Length: 139
Image (cartoon, one colour):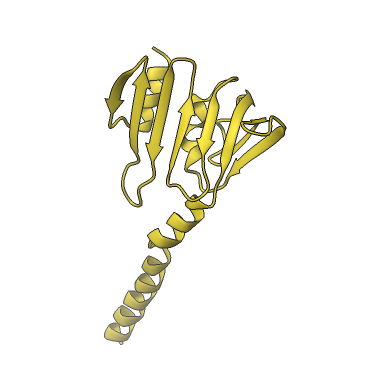
């Protein structure tokens, strides 16, 4: 009877563990469908993981709302301020935030830390974590 219980327990654990596996290809496809070319007019809420920012479309100059439910761009919403530009093109796994004298470029990675590069007045700083990027903002 104990062996049946152990087998059942292992089966349940296996079932649930497979539910938590990350499907990198599916995530990659989903992230690549997002497009946001926006000049931010109002700082988005940093209380939510997903991004919903209001602003003006970079090319059409019409009001637009950028929505990202992947939580990828939302991780960086605290860095955004009025007047900043978000550039995330459809089909790309990279986005950039353009500020007055700083450009933050972030490359998406599955199951790894995002790869970021910051250009501050032409000087390049690479490999910063999200927290280090946030700390830069307040210096």
